[in-house]
Length: 181
Image (cartoon, rainbow, N blue to C red; front, side, top):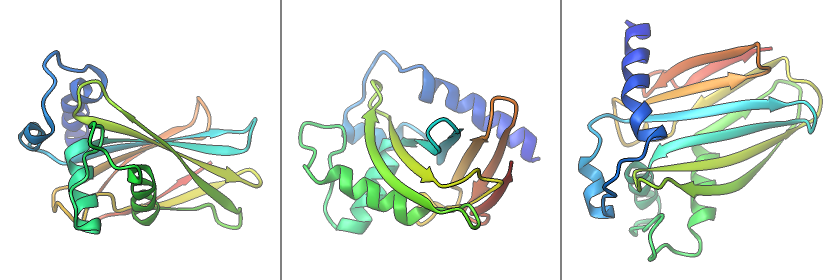
């Protein structure tokens, strides 16, 4: 069941996350664009600068809903009405909802910023984890949007090297995973 679900979700998201549509929806139209709740988190180890680089691809309307619940005010992310503190609010939300543990190795986390997709449907968020030492294990807890949707799925892809890549699908009922190097 899980491999079939993974294939279905992956195929369904290819167009949204990689091939922008020609018609760009307005922020008010985003809510009806996608009937499923999915995020993608790519984590890549860079030994040359001792970092784990994290890329999150999120549906923009889901992120706006989550931050609206936190702040009580609407945010116009990737819009001309976007607030100056949006990046810090996104960084704080991601820090709260995406936790990392590398065992005895210390992690220093920095939210680097975001990029709005041309399709106005998704957003790419970047975080860097500075590590001291070589990680042998990485545990994480991904609770992104699980407070909003019972059917939320969060795909996590960890690449310790080009030869060692692991993928796991997390959900509202299973938010933790461990990856070994």
